[in-house]
Amino acid sequence: MPVNNIVIGQKIPRELNERAKELRRNMTPAEKILWDQLRTNKLKGFHFRRQQVIDGYIVDFYCHAFSLIIEIDGDIHKQQVEYDAERDAHLVARGFTVLRFRNDEVVNDLPVVLEKILIACQSSDPPSRFGKGAGDRSGENL
Image 1 (cartoon, rainbow, N blue to C red):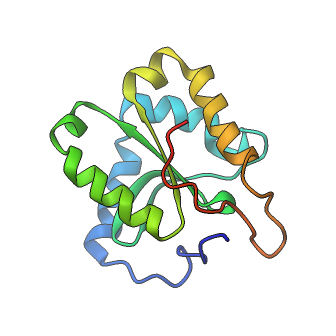
Image 2 (image 1 turned 90 degrees about the vertical axis):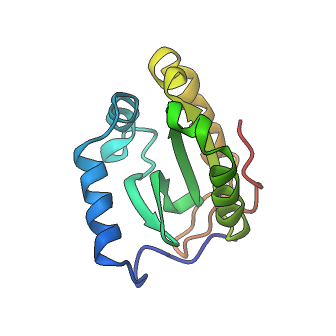
């Protein structure tokens, strides 16, 4: 079952909303590269949002139709492994699929990254007009 539309109706503290806007303005080079491929439904018509607030977390990219979260990890993530694991566990428990890629994967192997994202979308239940999407895929990293 898809996650209910968490974007509409969620209460976001002003500071968190401002932080998400700042992150959109100041994306990392790897995020910019991936966003160029995801924006305006370029990837097989799938709609992604960037720097989306979900349950108090700001996720890098989000596709609501498939309850898919994509995270691009830089060096800082080596220092926050436990935090990332707890965050992912929370999001997976809520019904999201979380894919993580390292910066260097996006920069050096973009076609492979895009293929893994496509596989995650296409292996999910196709969305219907009622929003049917991905089931629980337990945060698998393709």
